[in-house]
Length: 75
Image (cartoon, rainbow, N blue to C red; front, side, top):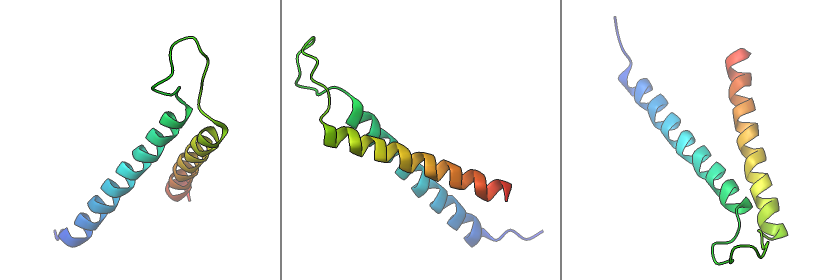
């Protein structure tokens, strides 16, 4: 039995980078939809329209990456 360690290392490295990137993008989406840190309670000041749009774009990118992964597995 022969194990191709170089290929295994490449798969590990790409998986690690993609996972950390996807979690980072999802985190940006959560931060974009959360209330501002400096806002006092009860004022109702939420994120601006640009932040909310960026957050939705982050969530869409995450959904596209998950859909592409499912496509690669099923196809």
